Length: 261
Ligand code: NAD
Image 1 (cartoon, rainbow, N blue to C red):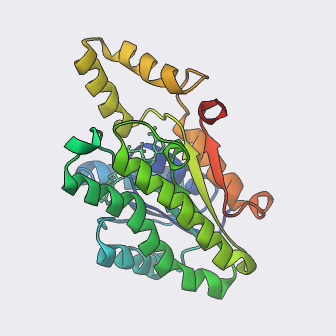
Image 2 (cartoon, rainbow, N blue to C red):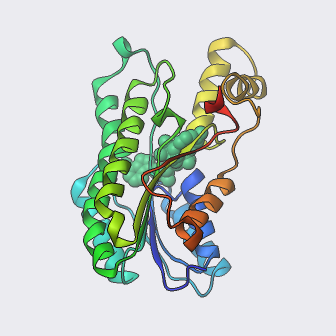
């Protein structure tokens, strides 16, 4: 479906980004992977991609998404190695939780940098090529926390709300170029980012991780089930398809009913 298209998926060494990269490569899209992690595991991931998707070009960039120069380098590397950036998935993200008066200032700065400013820098670098080719699909992985708040997540909620705002501006500025820009807003997805919150909850309440996980999901998500990373991969494919061409500037929640309440 996406043969001859080239994508960057930031933060694709783990969780949701890895599932999105698999979905794109499974649709014959060339993919630039990115993210932190053990070098040996990253090389194994690259080898798995090449094995599973032999007709797809796969490359990896270690760009730090909190660094504007690295992000420009990531886009340049994708244009050079893959040939263009047709699909840009801004997925890399981090979390830290604490009441605002105890929230460390450096955590605020790094969450704003990775969860918000990185998307500004990558979109800014990738758009000229998209406009020239009259095609682009930009997917900003926001969160339900781009639309509602939870306590103890000041930086995350601020960054994700702002990312939804950025999405709308980019959609307006690109509407006549066959470029779309949408914000995907997942509820709870069981990834390392959420595992940490489950462990913290288990420790603070003196309960086991299974109970902590059920409580965490149950209190916000009426389905009482995690959203699967693969569902988000499939949503990205839909938004990249012809049927998705009229979706732009939209926050799209995939949240087991969280925001219906
Ligand atoms: P994860 O921790 O499994 O993956 C995060 C990825 O980002 C990893 O590949 C990591 O290496 C990368 N990363 C972190 N900092 C980076 C940096 N400075 N430079 C480059 N890469 C960096 O987390 P996840 O749950 O898969 O989260 C992915 C995105 O989905 C995030 O933006 C997150 O906010 C969002 N999200 C997650 C959930 C959830 O419940 N898991 C819900 C809503 C939104």
